[in-house]
Length: 107
Length: 116
Image (cartoon, each protein chain N blue to C red):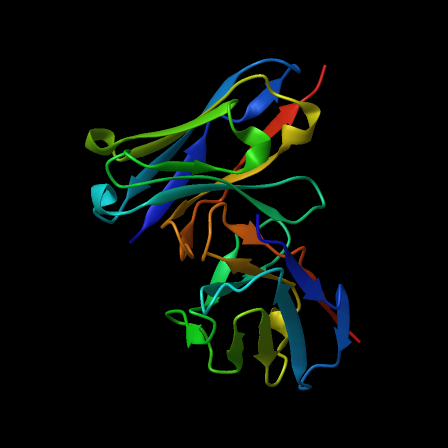
């Protein structure tokens, strides 16, 4: 099983600032990496797939980069609705696995 | 509009069984892999199981292998998760998702509580 490790666990950011979230895979997942956003009590929302392709309807302030074992999700200018938990997930191997999540909170 | 609606959750005793359902609409169900993901209270997301379009391939996380069975009925546009030998650690909200890689559509989830 591929282990996905996200950092930091919590990120405190002021509205309008840039947020950078990291995700590391225990072995290469090529570009088979997705990012999700989740608000409390809601289903996950797909933001990025293929490591860098924005999902339908996702604002351009969300961008992804990386390949192999190191990945980054960048939110260029945080809006109030962006304060949430973010998960990376690999789909290179079975079983699919998620990182433990990064909580983006208001500073 | 794509819709996924889970049902079947509830309170069950340890060692018991439960069957979850996911009713799909707004797309051609038979052409998509389908997935179950769960989230324990206050915890992160965990991939549980995925099934191919025709049901010929199924994949599970190790912790449920041999206890859970994913299935589908394409004529009824429905996905199922049969859960047996349930444990306290299976307590979670269970979400169904469209796709086997990076699902873009999810239901709102159904809560399963395993407790005596």
